[in-house]
Image 1: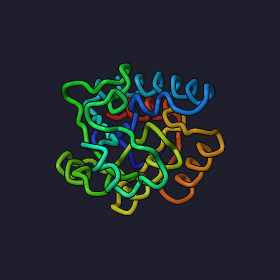
Image 2: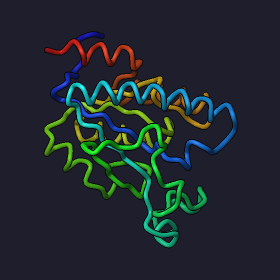
Image 3: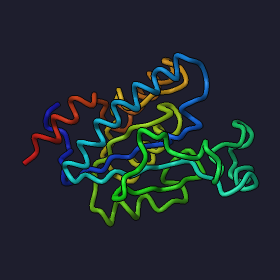
Length: 196
């Protein structure tokens, strides 16, 4: 387990959809889990900054309600993450730093019609660490597309969550079985910090 294909030199942290909209939805148990995830991502992000590991925010973002309805998601979800509205903003605790990257997306996968792959290629990163919401939707589908593009996938179990514990467990299990690795933030930080 300690010989994983990850180092501080080949790694980028992807923070997915940690938006105000997603932090306030659903029930109080979910919001409690989101608060815990925010705390753990904050620690992981600080470590990445110290190790010069790029932090990339991959956020749902629609320029207008019309654009949202053209995205293909409208049959399942109400409009959200519309530019200029509070729910399109990253939660205050995780606001991107000046040297972080932001990749807007209009689909569940962060790779679909975005510049994410181009950015990762330019940064010469081959291992991707996944944090954010939701484990079974945007995290899972971005991880799947990363795997198909030959990136090494690492889902951080205490830095992702979903609307229910069952959906969270499903997402992690699917990633671990088909696309990559699942580990805790504590283990990941130890691995990255021990790299020469």
